[in-house]
Image 1 (cartoon, rainbow, N blue to C red):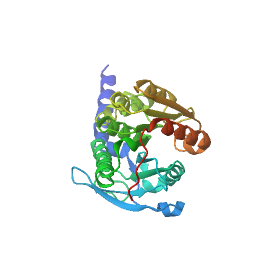
Image 2: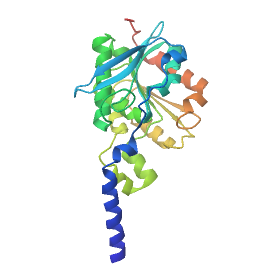
Image 3: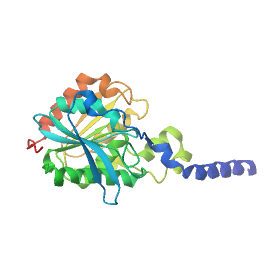
Image 4: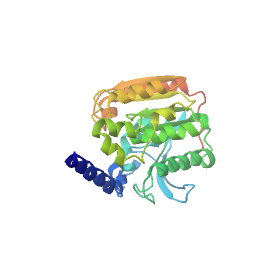
Amino acid sequence: MKHRMFRIIILLAGAFLVAGCTANLIYHPCGEVLRTPTDAGLAYEDVVIETSDGVRITGWWVPAADPRGTVLFCHGNGGNIADRLDTLVIAGRLNLNMLVFDYRGYGKSGGAPSEQGTYLDAEACYRYLVEEREIVPETIVIWGRSLGGAVAAGTAAEHPCGLLIIESSFTSLEDLVRERFGWIAACVLANYVYPVRSRLEQVDAPVLVIHSKDDEMIPFSHGRSLYDAARGKKAFLVIQGSHNRGFLDSLAVYESGVDDFITGSLEHKEAYRP
């Protein structure tokens, strides 16, 4: 019994030591922005946006030629906006403007990442679209992939939008960590919740959930649970391929499914303002 208690104490002590570096377990930013939309043949503008707590974050405004809506895109936990050029190209083909931004600590954005910080970053970008670009909220598509799905759901729960897209995301970070790594890891990351499912229950806009059956990082069951939690108009788009490349491996199905949902859900066409 004493030996068992000693092992438990050692494990807990290790967990508390690791807890000081938990941000490094969740966020994997890259500071070098090695490519721009020009490399994908897209026109764009650099934008710098200040958050409510004074952090300057950076992003790209990529306009469509004849936009029917505007995407606020929340990317996943790795790299930076330079790794999202494929998504910018897809948005252009779907006739959507896109604002893609780097969370604090990513790319050229200031600060260091945190759960609350990612929410504040997305909120600042939403305000930029509505106040600076004068985009009608009902034409905004809040779109999040992987960890970005949690940020997108939190933003859509707090602000009006035309629709919400949650792609390859989890029900909550707590659920995912407990399922994959056990209760000790869940304790270490206890301060990072990212409660996607509970936030979806507060979203009034139409919701499209996208998930791959082959996702090796976030189980398909999480996507199904998110779909079940969404209220009102919703759809579940099943794709194939890995967590990071499913949208490309299933490009025809993916693009068609997103196009159909946007067409059937956006009630107002974007009035483009350069």
